[in-house]
Image (tube, rainbow, N blue to C red; front, side, top):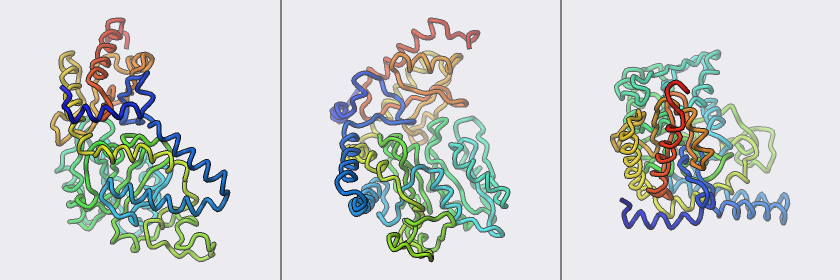
Length: 391
């Protein structure tokens, strides 16, 4: 049953027009668009229209302001944050700064990680990098001891998905980071699947690098991601992937690279200003509510999903321990892949992923009735023919 505090969260529903017509349970993939996002996009367009190229003065100030706001969310100074269109590009940039042929050559990661970064690192194997994949024994989790056993003196970095997209499993980023540091390795934490849904601090993790974006729990839409680099490391790293915004004085257009003294040295070329404006409404809402309040509601609602799934005999592919799961629950059953399209056709937004099942993610704006509706619709769909033989 919803608490009084949760009832206050539901007052934010009016800020998300899609909720009037759709049961939105896929913030793990793409969050609902806030009404205010259109106003922020219009603000960007008006600035461009009114000022032309001198809008760069306003846009530059906005990037710094946006870095401060993101820093508030993840517990980091603004100077340590840089933006790009996606996390894959940011990972490429940081890899170009930390990998030197002839030095440490081992990347430790897992077969549960979102594959984008794994693709990225694997493509460098022809240059001598080695990717060591930890294999999940249950399709949901990675034992903490597996990290300890794999990290050695040749390890360049560990790449840790804080939240696993296939199962909702939350890894102990601080413990894995400590293991990496004990062997002289770096820690790169991908927090895309937990930012805005699970409270954390990059300082408490002691992570060297953290990555994330706005499209999921922050309700910010595609085309914008962020990277944190530990302040003490910034000026020791010189990326090979650079552009004019990596320069300490980009509008001087010098031929010689002089790196910015902040995380902007990892910015490469012209930033996606429009994408940053589009993210602001959702980010402001998350900060106004507080991630701790979102987490408290999420734990109750994900437990409700467990209970309803168990009552139907579904396989649950998500850890049940509160400390080991994020905001995502994966359920599987014969015909789950076919059920995805039918649920979406009925206005229930979820998705299906191989080795995961149907992924369901209530957010701060979700009602108990919406969780119940998902299972009512699913019962009806299964009665209509999603048997093992029809899969």
